[in-house]
Length: 206
Image 1 (cartoon, rainbow, N blue to C red):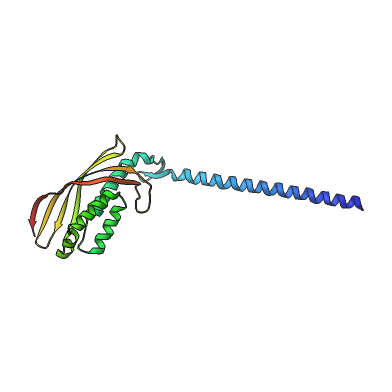
Image 2: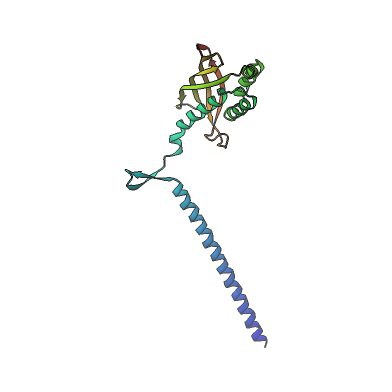
């Protein structure tokens, strides 16, 4: 009787060991499968597919992000200036555009904005129903040094009911790498931004 009980206990212990081993193996296999799935998905994200003359499908590796960094830098600078200088005669619209611009730059942009605000620029714009627009002509980035020195050239237009005043625009800044966010998708930050020239060019009567 005692021997039978001992045999049963041994069998239960052995079954428990087998169950633990099987469970561990299942966990290891599952973890490996998940890891391989993530690796495969990551590899697929690095590939793009293009059509060759609309007939055959070719696979091409996507370019390294660093190769497109200069294009992203120019886009960052362009968007900042468009947000900052595209203004309609409505307080909420002005604040919304300026807020988006300030997400792309440091306090140097805020200082320019506050100076314009203290001088009554935005109040006059709203009172007179003036629309401000910008046209970027060129963006020069020195990508051989870091932080990158940037100069932006363009024209701003001040649209009144009676005429349109065109102004020259030249700005300079430093461009540094930053964290990508929803409001800063290119992952740059503008520092030491200043307006070098914003003088009148000519006026067109409407």
